[in-house]
Amino acid sequence: MRKQFLSALLLLVVFLSSFIYFNAYPAKAISDFYVKVQPQMVCSVAEYEFHFKLSKTVRVHDWFHITFPPGTDFSPPLPGEGRDRKIRLKQIVDSFVLDSKSCEACMGMPFITFLEDGSMQIRLSSPVELNPFVENYQETVIQIKKSAGIMNPPCPGEVTFSFRTQHEETFTSQPVEILGISKLYVGVNPPIIGSVAEYDFIVNLEKSLKPHDWIKIKFPPGTSFDPPIPEKESEQKQRLRDILDAVSFPDCTCGDIIMGLPIITRENDSSIVMLFNTPIEINTGLDSYDLTEILISKEAGIVNPTIAGFYRFYMATKSEATFFESQPMELIDPSKFNMEVYPQLTSHIADYGFHLKPKKELLVHQTITLLFPPGTTLTPSLPEDENERREMLNQIDNAVYVNGLSVGGCIGLPRVEFNQDGSIWIHPTAENR
Image 1 (cartoon, rainbow, N blue to C red):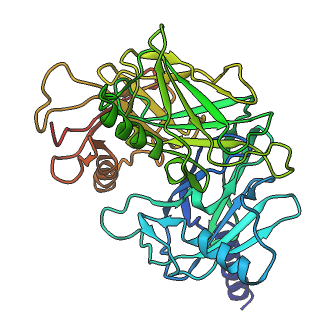
Image 2: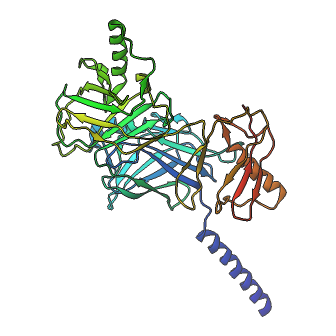
């Protein structure tokens, strides 16, 4: 009897130990979490992308929790209560995109809380079911557009974004570097030589501007227009009008206001200077003033220089008439090999972009070979079991795109080789030329 009692007690202890173990270390509902912030500048209204993989299904109306770093704020500020707050919350939720699906009004209003440490938390419900067990599931992406008006913290440095779903109690976090700005920051999209591009100018003005005061922007030597600016006066006016329509300030497009046509001149060094009048007052004396953003869309037809390298842009205003320069901006040559890694952090799962122009035609099913540097690892590791290994190789294949087309599914599995120096060869196959 005593032996039976001890056996029963031992089984109970084993059962309780197992119970405590599995509750102390629950399976995480998300993995491969990382954040993209554009622009990564202090006090800038930014666009945010949260990338992650689910291991548990998120049903319609299940909650997401996103925590922004201390110092994050809204521009314009979030009203305290009443009708104005509801209108602002509607504007915010309309700025969310979940897996390329707009979240407009179909998921209720978000809950926004400012915590004691100055961080901001947004809780919102999913408008769709997200099932990681469906075929070809890759990742989930939540995009928050600039129209939400979420503004980066005022101090440069490494900050942390956190995320969780309704299915777990702890947050998954990702550090992001927020850069300071001394005077002028320029974003060029795409940063490719000879391409018609969009230009995002973020400037920290010291002196105010009145409506119709002038602003000059100096583009690098070799910049051009497509189509060119005509010499015939009537055609030239229409082309200049099109360029002006492509210039915008926050909540204001220059072409919507009668402010005169821009003046465009070519300098001796082949740089281009564009002068236009501001359609709005920029009052740097206000407590609410942080930075001024000027966006020139691709509709202006401004073409990047045709030689790869680092370039600077310059700006001057009626109040600050001496040109001040931007940070160096690199323009790449797609005919040569270039690559990008995001995030550029150690021990993180990352997106890799390889830009190249083959010297010979790449035919269907020909092999592409990618060599990753020593220390690169696969997470999770490549399984020994043949079926599990094939499943993971299939996941790798589905994650590879050539010219925007997935190589997965129809061309066989990739080969993965681990070298003695710790580097990794991956051999996917091209699906298209």
